[in-house]
Length: 246
Image (cartoon, rainbow, N blue to C red):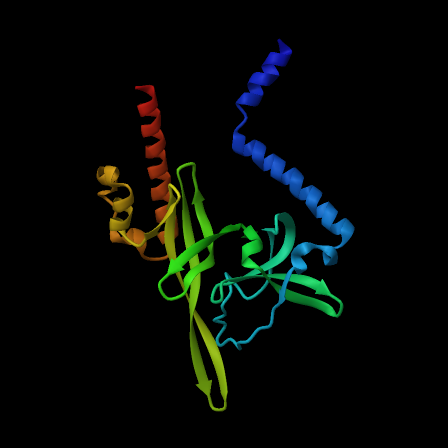
């Protein structure tokens, strides 16, 4: 009877909790392994050494959050690396890693095709293949704002460059901008306004009727949309349960 009780309790432990425990144990093992062999022997050196080509003006740099490396994790060339120093260039859309070299420390640009996903601080990113009439297919990094069983809500960070000349010298300011998209049933949809959401979920017009323009503007835009998509995901799940029970 005692064995059965343990089995029943295990079934009620949330799957996400079990996965988190497994990831924690695995990450600790990988960190130990990287320390044992030395990061200088890791596959993160499969990239090109980074050189900064711009002088920033007024602190308006081209990097995610701030102009500095942060601890993060990355899966690169099929291998996970934990607690490494990463920085995302949102203008060039390049992921940089800080590594020791013979003469000190250098930054390397990781090859996009080899990057599966990564985190910087508490922010998770995945790569997305985008097509444009001008440049054709290109791989861009998107931040994951919400991941559910039905869809993934994403945010793309980018920047415009502005050159400022002062006498003989010139500087650069980068003006940050962003956009949102939704990965739903294997397809990416731009999320710019209420019309975009209704075009994806036409059957939820009644639930979406109270959405105002404020959802898509201002500092609280991300949180507003995250909450909205959480509610939509719950509706989708409830409808699925209802259909299966009929």
